[in-house]
Image 1 (spheres, one colour):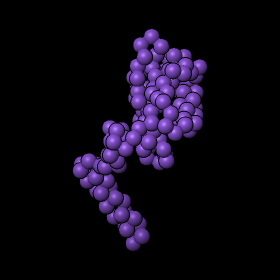
Image 2 (cartoon, one colour):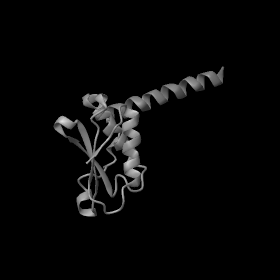
Image 3 (cartoon, rainbow, N blue to C red):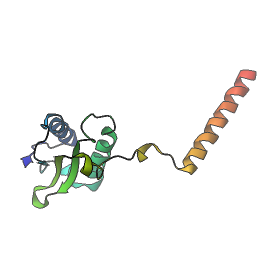
Image 4 (cartoon, rainbow, N blue to C red):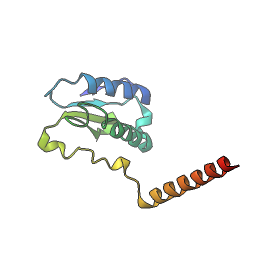
Length: 128
């Protein structure tokens, strides 16, 4: 494993993206441990890190398709992530199903109502 010296979430992101970009094809899994970043011990920051990664994998060439970042809690050493090359068969465990962009029917109805109100308001301004 690689022990990071990052003390901030920004430092963690920098090291993590550096590892993602430089990980060789077909390499053995790499674990990155972040014992110096106390913010990652908070579940909200830990979750936010993976929400960020979830959004980014939709626009990355290798990350999210052939390279997965898996959360791990390494006990006394703090939180860790494992970077792992995955094959086509096992990638289905990590694939994004694009649910991020689907709106609930309730939210879609509110959005359409809001757009209709805005269009009506614009129409009344133009007729004045």
